[in-house]
Image 1 (cartoon, rainbow, N blue to C red):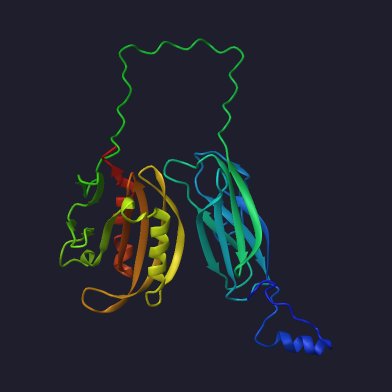
Image 2 (image 1 turned 90 degrees about the vertical axis):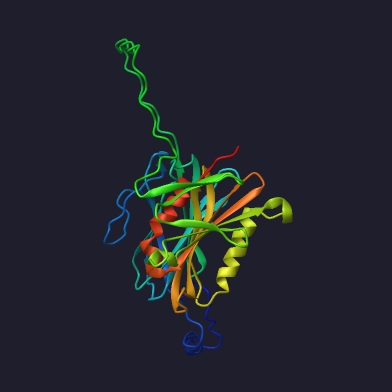
Amino acid sequence: MHLTRYICYFLLAALAGLAACEGSFSCSTASLSEPKIATAVDPKTQAPTEVVSQIPPTSGPIFATAKVASAPAGTKVKAVFYYLEGQRRQIAEDQVVLKEGAYVSFKLTPPANGWPLGTYEVVYLLDGKQAQTAQFSVVQAQAAPAPQSAPAPAPAPQAAAPAPQSAPSSVPEGYKEISEPNFGFAIQIPRDWGWKLTKGGDYLISGPQGSPAHEVSLVVQIIDKQVNGATLVGQMKGLLAQIGQVPQAKILKKGEVTMAGQQAPYFLASYQAKDTTGKAQEFGHAQVGVQKARYIFLVSYSAPSQIYQANLAAFQRVVDSWRFTKP
């Protein structure tokens, strides 16, 4: 249903107005109220249980919540998240379709290195129309004041050395690291997976032949920005448009994720396609992009839905382990 999308005009009498409301246009009474930011919600009702306006950089996920009343089945509620420091930019969005009026909550997970300091905004849309907004800030926690009569600190042991930090490129059990020397990047993939250079100059990564993981298509595409003036944002928008033309395509989620120390745009989608046997199936698709110097690196992951879910950790490891090996 649409929130105040159509206005029923009473032209001659109340009966005429009622007749108009019963036609192809509908008069929705759905409303969205009580926008809140919380660090926890009730798992059954989704109502906020720990409402906040500020969080430290080390905080975990936050939940943007709201109460939707008089909402018929099929009402769509969307939350769009923005980072307001510098230039206002969108960092994530999510949508739910209601079966009835209720609380809704949208979870936003921080980057791996913590929340960037600053102010964030959530815009709530009810059936495509902006209904409410909420904001929260990420601030440094204030240090506790020093005691008035603190004892002198004990001298540090002269021979004690700091514990060594684990190398950022440490490879977990069951994985291996592969390095591309020409463009200067390294990633980690399952130990029994292989990769090859395609005729188009892309790198194709997949599981062992004869296994379900061989249906996986994990592709690293490298684009030279100086050849045609390409931009990362432009490339991601183009890929979104291409996905939209595939039969039964759905864009499920868009946002940013931390990859190689930068905020990388990504989206998730599903669509109908044929697997390696020629059978039509629903596919899952994930796309992310980063850039370094003159090059754009587009990483896609797709497979039939069940195989996609079963091997999603492999794609996540590629994203988490990606590092550039050249300055």
